[in-house]
View 1 (spheres, rainbow, N blue to C red):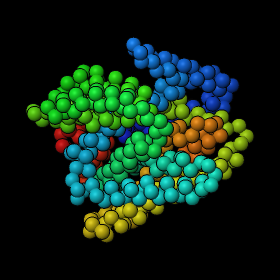
View 2 (tube, rainbow, N blue to C red):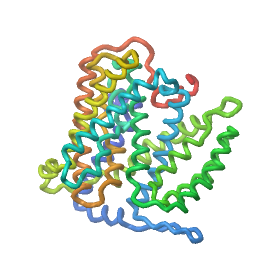
View 3 (cartoon, rainbow, N blue to C red):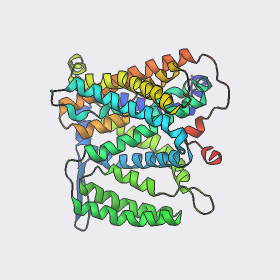
View 4 (cartoon, rainbow, N blue to C red):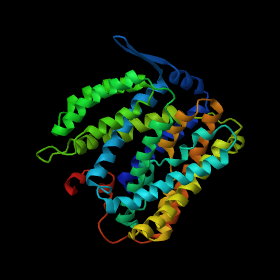
Length: 401
């Protein structure tokens, strides 16, 4: 058993831990301890500072505050890729950008077709998201058999996908807007931008400004996790001496996000009391839309986007057509981002259950088929250096960049 564990690639462990927590959440939700779980998640906690008072349930604190840390980490990764990584030049960024657009539009259209006229159309963005940790973890299971170029392509597509998801959350899942509080967000964000301009690596100052900015974002009506993204984008890539606070923070946050924030989110959000209605839930328009969007829409959209992009820009594809299809299936693992958008889109028990079952089924099918396709296409180790540390933001990334 120990020998088998030692053979599991390090990049796969975040996905394994996340899956274990999701399974635990499901078992707990369908056990005799389910009422206790519900009571804990519905317990209200209040934060007060002067005239500012924020009251939320435990589940809401996890979704709005803890996930802001996750989005801060995603923002750091996004900025690194845009500044010095796989998306740092127009020539290398355009193909994964077009592929990612296809991978967002196609699932969304399939979901809208399935749910048309049902009243559940608001969840169109749920199958448009990709879980980077799970997706890269699945590919990592094949080790050096998958070419580095294909891994980098998957990372680039997933990063663009996350950027689109962030924009969608900001613009399409904001119910009310309080301009006064939004102006206060700018009051705290402006000094961060000044520090960025000066290339100051002042850890404490960024955090002191980010915390009240989050609180103001929470009060503004815009999803407060966006504050995490804004804070990340304000972190300077490098200072005058070439040192990178951004990469340093990304390295330090990685274990806390992968083995803390995401598992806690899964435990708080992934549980669903299925009872005897699993078949009915699978047939729900929301479940069907998500399953078909992730399992069919993702590979179809990414494949079409890659083909069109390579033809229009005369760009070289990162792999053969079957390889691209395999990557498209792997990108259909939505999980964390899909569940998060699902919680923003729907607030009733029936739809929330359908979201979870749809995300689980669609992600599982995508993972299994994607792994099978890539394993069949790439049966022998590929030539060249494995760049997994680079595209996961590993410890060697700073040396490479």
